[in-house]
Image (cartoon, rainbow over all chains, first blue to last red; front, side):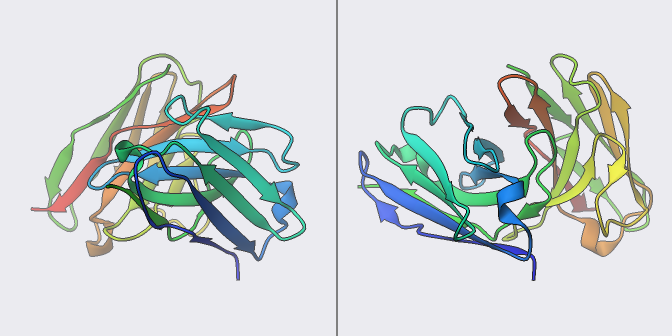
Length: 118
Length: 109
């Protein structure tokens, strides 16, 4: 089955760190760019980061650049997002999504919830 | 930074009616524009890409049009399962970054 399954969401204090993972199955993971998109409670979608299939190039939204790191393990078909210096406004459901570097996001996971609060 | 503005914010319609959703970009995005549907508690689902191409499995009642800065998603005859929030998305060429519109909620009148 073609799917993405996120994990790692949790409650974390402001200034803390958290790592998210996204396990892919059913497609040739290494040939696709992968993305993280988040959605704050009651709000719209916000692109967070994109990583090319090889892992050689990463792109970030201004709101997370310098605090978040996207990575992947193509031997394990897994995408990661390491988040540090977390702020209240990082509270959101985080989705991973499959795409190409120039194309749309054609497969989404179910999301994992991150809450930043003291 | 390209900004996408969707209108209207909310569209109140009855099943069987036609829905027309607009997405306007602050500068030209060529024909790269995608549309997504999101239902409560669910992940978004890709509907359209490159402005007018339906994604796999999307019914023919969904159509997209436009180029440059003006794009439209049309649902020809609303089915009960179409009541949801719809987002447009564009990609900036370099560096590759992505922007979503703020969404249009299609609700049952």
